[in-house]
Image 1 (cartoon, one colour):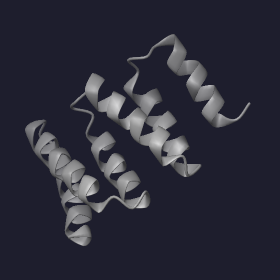
Image 2 (cartoon, rainbow, N blue to C red):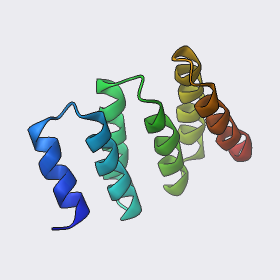
Image 3 (cartoon, one colour):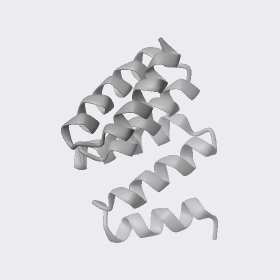
Image 4 (cartoon, rainbow, N blue to C red):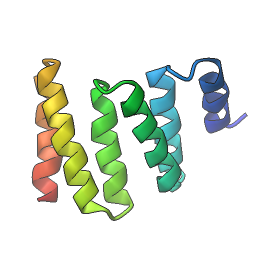
Length: 102
């Protein structure tokens, strides 16, 4: 069974599992299914707004999809959340991505 299918099955058992939803979004992005990936990232951050890795990879996915403005917005929100939860390392990594994009 392909990894995406496995993750989707796991997600059915617990739709609030941030790690699994993140994995689904990543697999969709890897497959070039950016709209579906971004929908999963959006749902992830709606359910778990402090899931910092989601902001970083959602920003990357927006970049891959060619939407620099949305990527910048996502990175900016991610930096704020990372600082809020005390994850300064992640805040720095997201800031680097934002700086490269700007």
